[in-house]
Image 1 (cartoon, rainbow, N blue to C red):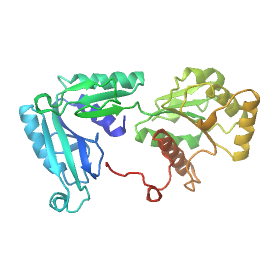
Image 2: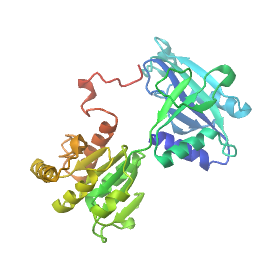
Image 3: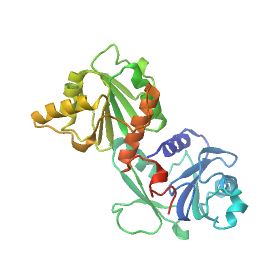
Image 4: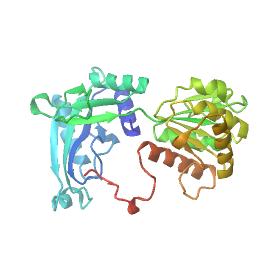
Amino acid sequence: MNKELQDILALVRGRGTPAALATLVRVEGSSYRRPGSRLLTDGQEVLRGSLSGGCLEGEVMARARDVLGDGQPRLLRYDLRGDADLVWGSGSGCEGLLDILVERLDPAAPPEWLAWIDQARTSRTPLTIHTDLDPDHLGVRRIHLQPDLAASGFVETLNPPIALWILGASDDSRPMVRMAKELGWTVGLLDHRPAFARPERFPEADEVLSGHPAQRVPELGLDARSAVVLMTHNYLKDLEALRALAVSGVGYLGLMGSRARSAKIREELAAEGLSCGERLHSPVGLDLGAEDPETIALAVLAEIQATFQGREGGSLRSTRTPVSAP
């Protein structure tokens, strides 16, 4: 679940009046945004999100006012192929056929699918939702239990947010906490030094714990969508933590330090019959020329994002990775 959707849902719950949710549900050709992109509006202004490079937002808000007025969902189609892109967006580059579902969300009577998302996020389980696009059942949703099967309508899988744990609560951890929260991740810190592991030092963090890794790591509830970055700058504490992490279900491990230091730790673990395998990234982070805490945080978080998306993290211009929907 990305930050955009998290913010939209929080806005819906915090409002006292209905809002219109516009969701990009189908694209043919290229598009600035992919299916699943959303925009929340009160009919007068965009509250959060976007659907295009700016070419459609005004038109969608105008149609959203109709939806807010009568409560009936609408499926809008915009053909921006060829010269139509010049008409709609002054050459914004959308160049695709876009279907957008616009529906009213009333905080006083929230739809059931909002509760499904809350439950999935709490339990940290993926949720696949099928949205009916048939005119007779437009906007009706159901949980899609077999996402690999072909289905009409719009099918979307929402994964739980990445859960990042930083082991080491020194000052150089602060920018990583701030940036990760901007991405919509949950963030926790663990440090064996009580003087460092204080919530007031990391006000953005969801949790700050004190204790030794051997006792605390098994309590963190690490899963395949969890990432741990070891920034203790203490060889023995890193080794202690990796002993516990090697048998956990964590999806990503990042270890600060040199290649020689990493190799020595791997050797010690191997002598004990333990291995973190390909999950362990050390030196940690993408090669961005990082030199200070802020750029190091950027490099590390970028590598985590790429890893969970199954990407290499290289330059798009040297790959054939699609930038927009096919």
